[in-house]
Length: 71
Image 1 (tube, rainbow, N blue to C red):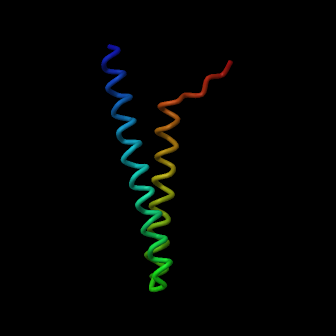
Image 2: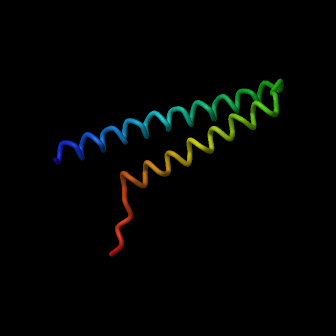
């Protein structure tokens, strides 16, 4: 039973790591487009929206890994 919980936690941590890398990559892409000066506003909006969705998912995963403890 405990192995299943540990495997699940490992899977959540791996997914969290993937999402954080993707979030950082999106941030880099947005910054590169802005610095290039030849950016498409709609494309940047889409990237920012995707970045925000990733951030929300990261927050949810972190909450599952580190539950609030009310004393």
